[in-house]
Every structure is written in C-alpha cells, then in structure tokens.
Length: 152
Image 1 (cartoon, rainbow, N blue to C red):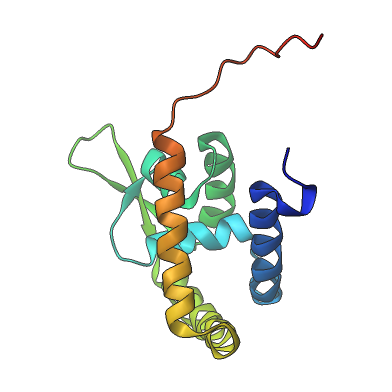
Image 2 (cartoon, helix red, strand yellow):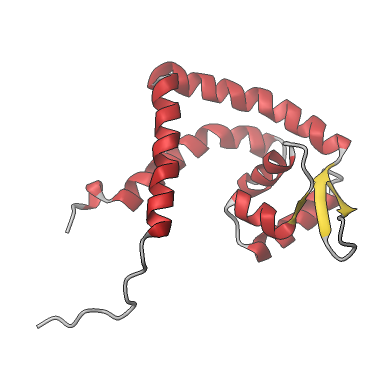
C-alpha cells in the first residue's frame, strides 16, 4: 500500500484546504459559507439554474443545497424564477447578489494572482486540466466490490 503521505485523496484534501483557506476570510467577511459562495459563483455566470444542476455544478448534495438556498433567498441574494416548465423552479442572482459577487470576485482574483505569481499561471492551468482529466478517469472506472477481502 502507498505511504500515507503519498495517498492521492490526502494530497488532494491538503491542497484543497490550503487553497480554500486563502479564499475563506473574504467569504467569511461577507457572511457566507464556502458552499454559499460556490452557489453564488455558479449563478453569476448569468444562467438561471434548477436545484439539481446547481448541486452538481457546486459539488454539493441536493438536500444541502436546498437548505443553503433558503438562507440566500432570505438575504435577497438569489431569487426563484419560473422555468419553461411551470413546475420547474429556477434560481438566479438578484441585483444585490450580483453586487455581492462583484465585490468578492475582485478579492478572489487577487488571491488567484498571488497563487499564480508563485505557482505559475501555465502550471495552474495545467493542474486544473489534469484534475479534470483525473476526475473523468476516476468516474469512468468501475467500482470495486464492496465486500472486504478475507485475510488468511
């Protein structure tokens, strides 16, 4: 078995924590959780999204998204709009939500510039491409059986 420090899941978790830590003070100052910020970021692209699509894009469980949406709606950051199918609920940023996104995005871009200054813009772009490819490969692999092997 690979050593603990060479474990892919541990290395990914540590990299995620180290980078998320750089963005967290700015979302905290805005009274947002990291998942709420991901929702705002996803909606800032301008397209109204349904809850399932939003959950998938933000890498969140759908029940978690439903709970955090209420908080964002209560703060008038997002609003519900009717979809083409009257039963389908779509969400989008309000003007207030867009202003909040714009304020945090400036700081977020500064954090990205700091990371790129040390890590390298091309290296960061390549890393993101490699992580996308890793996810695609992992998702394409069959799951192993859930049974534990017998040890003799």
